[in-house]
Image 1 (spheres, rainbow, N blue to C red):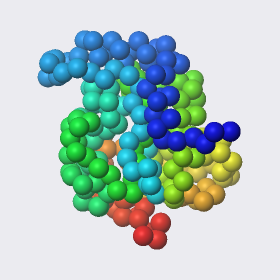
Image 2 (tube, one colour):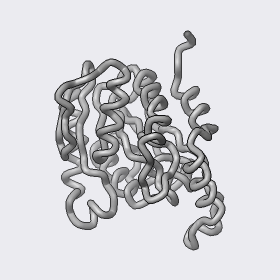
Image 3 (cartoon, rainbow, N blue to C red):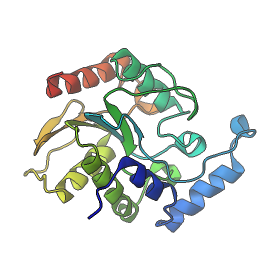
Image 4 (cartoon, helix red, strand yellow):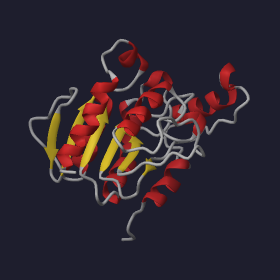
Length: 227
């Protein structure tokens, strides 16, 4: 069997058309746009993972945002959740800059890799179980390809569930099934899964997730790795 690589996974992700509902939605959003981005060309395709190929930390989200990753072509880039996330990654020494607005903006990650359970922007941010399951093999392949991986931070319950499913498919199963929570932590084989509230505007505007709380998650991840 030919060994997999992040480059090969990316090439497979960006041409995927396995979910007709998501294909129709992502492409319609890219055509119709919104007024504030009317002059921009949208990516309008599945969004691959991004980051350090030697990453020991995988940060996992739900899916690209319709006018964020689906527009820019990079996960968490160009939306408010990403603004909150990248600021924290910069403070905690995983990113070289605190903002990310485009694929060519110079952002670099050190020791971290960003991905999502689903690679296409879903209507109402809700993939179906079938759409989740069609996409999970990409995550399984990324986990295998990230040969130095030690910790996975799951941003939200959907990402927590997706990580458990992907790791289970790779033979790392824990019973009883651990429940999601902020700073919930479980070891699955050689990896640690760490829960974090998603940096959505609903959570950050209400104070459910503060900058200090998000920083604590990434510092905990560093401590779990012994770095």
